[in-house]
Length: 471
Ligand code: UTP
Image (cartoon, rainbow, N blue to C red; front, side):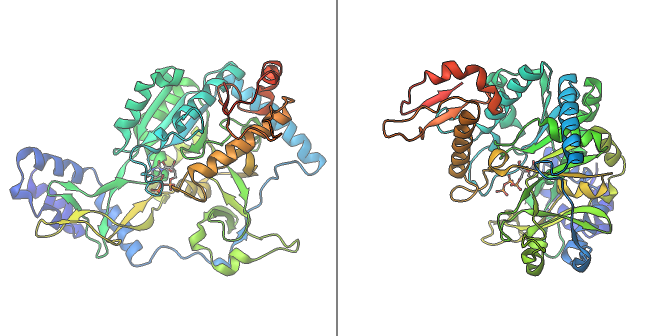
């Protein structure tokens, strides 16, 4: 592509400055910049940026917002009991039939954790130092054994962490999974813009690009050919989770069965918020449509509102655990225009008009990110099922404190002790009568308490050392 072709793309949308250094670039650099520019849909992106900068994104009419209904964790009446029993049975059939695949989004930067590498490679378990990817791979292997079926695993990476992610799996021989059943797909990128709506250059020959958010998964599943691959494999449903929540139940027959029986296109687990300040998106209803409203967008008055039972009115929060129907993803990806990105103000290193390098101390740019949960509004019959926090949710977001590696390990230990008790395995106690504080159960052995029962005899012979690894 020649300079003037690029000018024709950029000038009408006010982005001609991106060619400022063109004449200084060698041919390879020119090609690099040209291909990055040609890959973007500038009119669409610039209109999103204008909306974001002008706060023109549609305001939510909060007075009309209602809490979205959700199904309880335990059935509360006879009809629900029957529905849940049927759903569990159907879910088991679906799992045995091999029509379910795993989908993990792992393209994030993990800025808050401050770990230098793909977050999935982060070693978090207390004794084996297993990484998040290893933990999920072991779980998948266990589920495959349990259901005598294959669960292909699709992992979304970003251009920034794709190679190290693939290398990590290769170095670890895919943790025992068949390499052909672990499929990587890269999400797309979007350019960052300054607060005047001008796209930033990361170098004279490259745009300041960053991953387009977890909602970029839909386009990535389509564009990478993963959707087609799923069709060839007979996959109908995706079990979706984020790479930083190792406690997630990878394949829950109840959740899957409910998804299918109710003909939902996108189903979600809901955490009942601990208190109004817990920073989770809220499942809401607006004009009969289900949507997730971000914590930061909810007015304080609504956050604090209680119902007649003195419970938070907007109490169903999203831990980002979903079932997605492949047909729904196909439908979405043939008409992408309804999907709007969100604005995030970030520090983005870039180069100034004089070519000098800018390392900002404060946010200098807006990034646009698609959010996966925005698809719920577009789904037919979206279903919401309460989740068990202690069993299913302990994300690793921060380096310390809440939602950190340590809080995740604490939750894992409590769950392990609970599982041993529930499965009738006596918890080997230390000399002072307390449960071992250094205990780790590999998901290769158990993904639910009943998996431990067959090993009760062997496990009850265990003596509490300083370290107790059950694998
Ligand atoms: P977060 O919103 O927690 O972002 O992502 P993050 O990048 O991991 O962490 P911070 O905010 O920089 O500290 C939630 C999930 O969505 C994935 C992440 O990998 C994580 O599993 N994600 C996020 C993507 O796959 N792509 C993105 O562009 C953003």
